[in-house]
Amino acid sequence: MPHIPLPEGVPGPRGPMLFRPEVAPPMSELAEVLMRGPSTLTLAERELIGTYVSARNDCRYCQTIHGAVAAHYLGATEEQERLVRQIKSDPSTAPISPKLKALLNIAGHVQQGGKQVTAEDIAEARRQGATDLEIHDTVLIAANFCMMNRYVDGLATWTPDDPDFYRERAAGLAQRGYVGSSSRSYLCDSQKRLSGTGQDRRSLHCLEAPPSPLSSRPEESWAFAHPR
Image 1: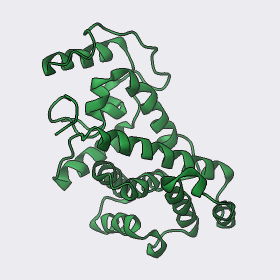
Image 2 (image 1 turned 30 degrees about the vertical axis):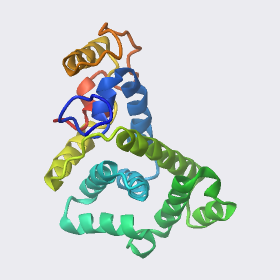
Image 3 (image 1 turned 90 degrees about the vertical axis):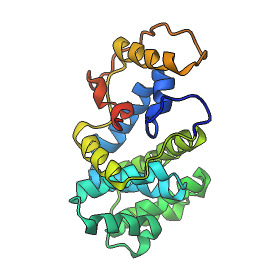
Image 4 (image 1 turned 120 degrees about the horizontal axis):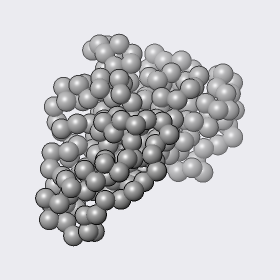
């Protein structure tokens, strides 16, 4: 049961983003840039980094949905789902590139604390062919997932049990992406949803927000990536 009154039946971060709709656009845009923007890291590699960090943080929702997205990018087979589970458990034994193993090592140290990343970690990643931009993005992906893991679990948001739920949502997220609109209509609609929860957190007036520079479709935002 959520620690604060969130819309019922809304999974993961979408519930708290509907509670505080102003945060959805910037958080979604950061995710879109990191996870789907131009990069020499593949979409699957980036999702695997997020999945690994989420597993280390014991965030069941995030590790399951992003693991499903990674498996979707890799081919959506049982073999790929097993690979994701192996990477979550011990990436050093997984059949992945030495470069990705080195980057996952960095991500795991970020999860422990930023100062746990050592010069040796960075040198090893470079030896395995990682660029400085890939190292930068790995650290920021890991840090962002730590935030999202704590956002989801810190408010005890709803985490479905059905594996097919995550497979279906993964396919939609892979198609639509993370980013969406911070339009007035989206914020107003979100606040109207809250009017039925009995919350008195704020008066339900509509808030103006700057439009997203990346998309004008609210259904494509992080908050809408996990529909009911």
